[in-house]
Image (cartoon, rainbow, N blue to C red):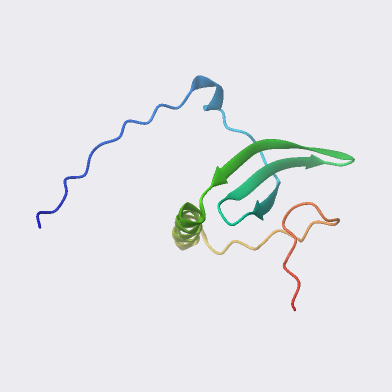
Length: 99
């Protein structure tokens, strides 16, 4: 079987997204069919969702692999990154409880 030729896909970045959004927290939830990632800007006493990304479990696996690969490359170039302190409260990067 002949190898398929890779097709170039042109990606358009809308002007309103070019500046990006800032998030200092994140919340993840899922169903059987989807993962929902809410990126949050927390500035006590309030917070707001700055972006929401919804994807399939298969694509979530690819996102995690890409993030891990890029963190590894970043640390090779700039040195080890220490994890931020666990935020207080129940919003965001709450570590899973052990059963």
